[in-house]
Image 1: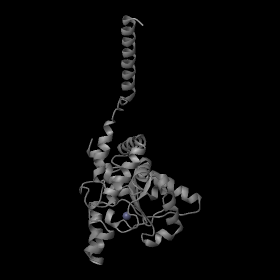
Image 2: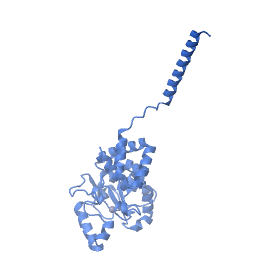
Image 3: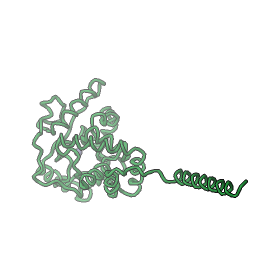
Image 4: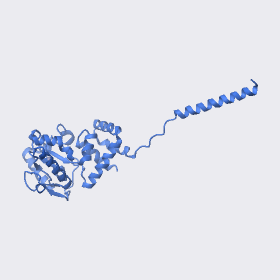
Amino acid sequence: MSERNGLLASIILLCGLLLSCARRAEAQAPAPAAPVDPRAARVESAAEVLPPDVRSAFLAAFRASPGRLYSLLEQAEAESAAAGGLLILVDKAHPLPESHAPADLSDLDLAGIPVTKPGMRLRRPALDALARMVAAAGTEGVGLVIGSAYRSYAYQLDLFARNVAAYGEAEASRFSARAGRSQHQLGTAVDFSPIDDGFADTAAGRWVAANASRFGFSLSFPEGMEAVTGYVWESWHWRFVGMAGVALQDGFFGGVQQFFLEFYAAWEAAR
Ligand SMILES: [Zn+2]
């Protein structure tokens, strides 16, 4: 081999080496990062209101199916907007103003819903869903009767005072809300009759526990959750939160309405 040919061969070899290095570098370069959905930061920030164990479980469910969470939140916002504040957080720390009185209250007995006394009212979206639920139970031979529905601020003020007189303030606070702190003031919560622990063991109680979620109703004060909800177990008290509300609560918050509504309030506040 001549000196010139040797030089040429060396140049070709060098070029080949450089090319293969470039290809290897290309193969090792990280794939371009997927664009981060701006809603992710909002979800993570809102989740900070949750207790640590609930937050971890929620974030795991969110990371497993973020698209499902976003889509359900969008549906919940649409349902809540259409029904006017369906998902307002009302509890011992988040009172409603005295002036909060729904404009679309309708009579239950006029809608054919069995009641323990006349004059009970609910907001239209809750009443319509309740009417469908009562009819569905009826076709299975189960009679549902409503024992309490909308309660005004003034009514709740009087009711709490009567409970305090009968049981003392500390005990009354475990099952009765102060004025402004009751979900009944929203006009979307009902108490099934009988309003006592016996309800859970009636045919109506079993049917409601198994089926109410299909109609957008949620148990507000589950058993063993007094530290979370502020109230003892109330098997008879159900709040209408809509279909997306129920799906969010069950799919991402362990079926606990309080955790869902606390998160949702923080999510809305972070707009
Ligand atoms: Zn109630």
